[in-house]
Image: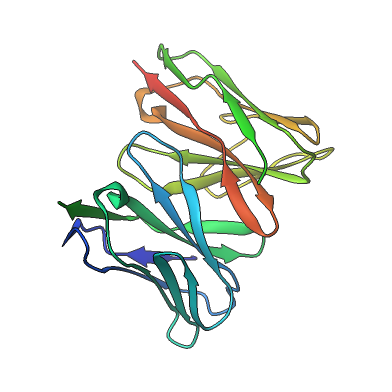
Length: 109
Length: 112
């Protein structure tokens, strides 16, 4: 059983703070990792992908991958109320993606 | 990324009926994926649809309940058959591009 685990939250952070979202996965052979943002009533939107160990930065977002620990995280700097959403971690298994249950992020102004 | 259009965007259905969801992509793609998102839940892959072959279903999903067509490289349909209230979900069509997965806007079905 391929599993992707996330803390469901909600994670509450004040505006301007760093939000840290975490995800662990069960299968060491996974090669591709993704973070999606989903606003209520909308479909998931891809915000970050990461394939190699280390950090990958894109604007206010940084994805971190540690394959040895089977751990991937997403940092959101200078959090804004518009970042309030559910963040889904997804891990590739072959040509399929398995999604975590998602973490609800609430940014309070 | 590809532009993915789904129809209907939402519908209210009666128990025991069937509904077909259409997915149109603006470019040719080899594989199309159908996901389900039940209320308050994450996404679960229903099946992978390849053009010219039968869809491949994930554990817990069967062709009789979720028949899929893939007549060409830009179009697919998912039918939800003999619906019950437990089928109330968002159904999402998705395609890959450059190794990343992109979603349509989804079809929100409510079964009464």
